[in-house]
Length: 223
Image 1 (cartoon, rainbow, N blue to C red):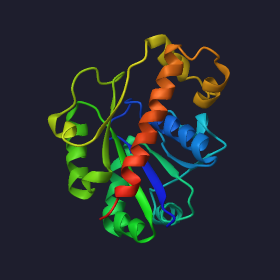
Image 2 (tube, rainbow, N blue to C red):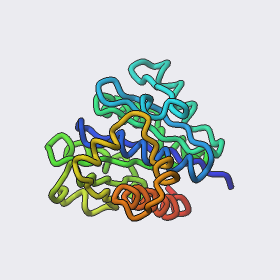
Image 3 (tube, helix red, strand yellow):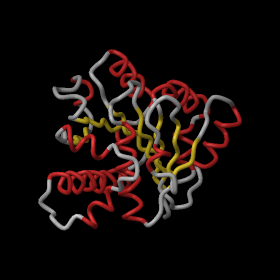
Image 4 (tube, rainbow, N blue to C red):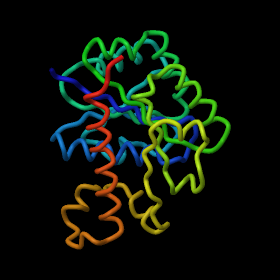
């Protein structure tokens, strides 16, 4: 049976590395499947569209027409993985929409599996937003992302009770390097001959995290 994953990368806080995670995931899926469609819902943050313009479309959820246009694309079971880079300013509106139209249930009816990747912070906004998602999203598809470059210590206890994907912190000079427009993670793997470099290993570990996530979540999703 054909099943299509929809990855929703989100955070209620700015500057937590959400677009970085969306970039990594989009490039991993493109490498693995040969195709991916990413949606950029950002107005005030670094934009996924700037980094991956050939596979990314913008989406607007501030009016009914924009919401319906996006939802129609997301519930389409066409076998093409989707990635949403959801800006913090649109977080509440997006999940309010999901609740109002029953998006998660509707997606499952179409054999589309939504996977929520919540990029954590240690402020009250992040804690409150995560608790809201716990009420709305089945636990098997609510995944916490711990970006160790941003959150150096421990996450809130409630976040650690579920599944957590941990992305190791890079040195500042490498973090600045990977923020450059035009940098391709897959391109780096292909062209950097020395596989022992820190960045090479970091990208490979990141891709392995996504591979393991897909293997563990997709076959087990039943609601």
